[in-house]
Image (cartoon, rainbow, N blue to C red; front, side):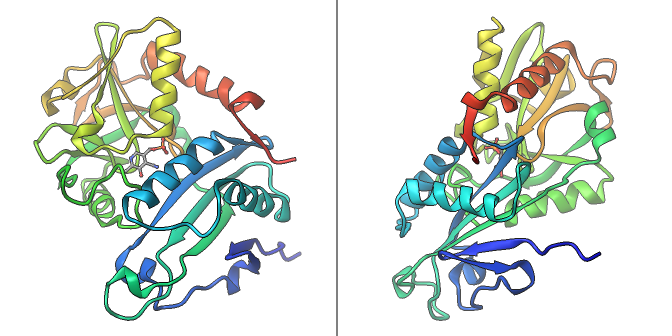
Length: 296
Ligand code: PMP
């Protein structure tokens, strides 16, 4: 029996996945000129949809990209795409490109941005590895400086993380850790990073060039509600090796314990108690209808 083909939203219309195409003159393709969000739906609830839409508009604002829809219409497009595909659990990729222009990079040549919603699944890590803790490696690829391509604008320009992932792959690691332009710890490939030392939770400040992750923000909130001290600071790479616990956070990754970094085992190599406690909070939150937007 052939599976029903997923339908993709492009500029207000639905197309079967095999026919969902955009122009080769779209500056999203030619220059990585555009913005996007990765969002998750769990059990009929789109987790933190409003927050993702807000970040999409902030990213677009920073690159002077005028999204041709208001926020409510973009939210509706996301919900409609999920409904059309009869999905209650999904990974959602919401993309707004600069649109079709000519071969010069001038954005003024692109009169109409392209809006795309893909609702599918994502698997970025082996579930068993994810549970036991991943092997991470600090890669040579630095995040751009604050005044270069900013990572806090979630743009389509992802060559930096792609290069990081290539290096992690070559090192036989599950995940990479990127440093900021100043050499301090910044984030994972497409995740934020946290460490725990003597009961205190630390994460790099977003001034290092780390994306202000939506999962990161929630984790900080839950940790503080649980009375843990959370400190955003500059973290030296060597501090990672000395951590009692370490974990990544992200929409696609969720919360992932880190077992080892550049061959240094983190404490006993097992997910630590604070990491596990926060993973429980994550599971609670994704089941809570108040933490997202219902599909139906
Ligand atoms: N950093 C980068 C570079 C990312 O691409 C992502 C994924 N969006 C994250 C961090 C994690 O952010 P979030 O929790 O919002 O998914």
